Image (cartoon, rainbow, N blue to C red; front, side, top):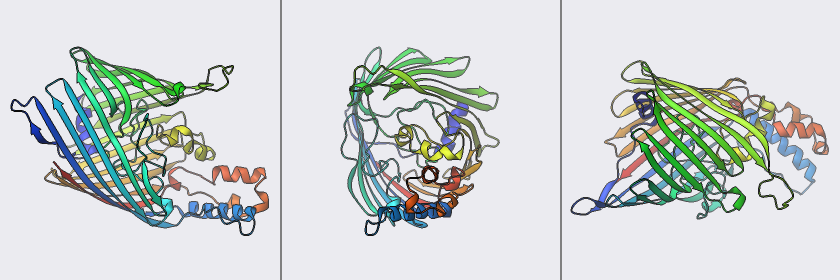
Length: 466
């Protein structure tokens, strides 16, 4: 990993969590059991886009009229404001036997309390909450129920996030079970990371979601290695795999990858290095969607449907000792060409699985991190949808107490045109079968991506034990 990439990542990710503590160790130190834990609490306050609130209320009115008296409202109307409180406990353990075998385990549970059911569907706090209620984590062969209990304004979730064994052999390492993989060089977007990606607006990036895989990593030289993965799925046609080769060429870290994931074939590449005092990086992935795969009718041929390119190019600079700046351009071939297609893009299977982020095609991201002191850091992230245009600003301040307690405060500030409810205002329940209603309902009057997002503030505390 090149120096420019390393310092930029540290600046953006924060000071990091406390290292694991040793619970037991053999006399010669070759075998040991380590453990650590944390508790995190996150409070958020939200003000939804007034245009979105009015639009959903109009849609609710029309559908209620169509259902007839006494049928009850569909309940689509969103509250104008709200708040939530999330609490997470995470336990991690690792047992090492000489230099041959390592077993890793991590489990966490979380409780989310919200002022409205609208705010309990997709909250995230260090990966504790597993997306839409009851959906459960993706990319896993088998799992515990993600949601233990759910009612209006309350969710209790669990997540067995790591359960793997690593066997270190002479020529390669073999890892079997639930594990974490982090591919790609992008700061905000990672097209080549199909398995454990973060959303570009994720503030707490300490925990990546574990996936079920069998992985073999073989060093080819001092600066190169080969990774081969099997990605099991319950449906035979969805079984997947990946191959990734890494090498250092002329001072640049370069990777090439090929994967079959669910119903997609994906080819990827990434690089990182330095051009003088500037760190540069980039990655790209091209996807071929397979059609007819796993169809119960054996006469249906397997073919190629949708094709799309996603790519990132970026740079990191450090103007002063305390200030680090990263910038990226992102092209999302799965995105819509204009706001009329945003709703369809955000509700696509890939977006629901957390593989892609963003409804549009052209984005820019800029992040600045300023180290006020060794323990206090101020950060500002700006994500720009270039085709709207609209902007999401995410300011964050972090303070560490002796690497065992972190305080974090921040917010989300959207800038962009709000949804326009005018297309729904003139319609009634008698219009639900018309093309006019279908067109209005399929777009919800969206005019920009970040103009539909919420203004929010947050405060978080994390306590680490080892």
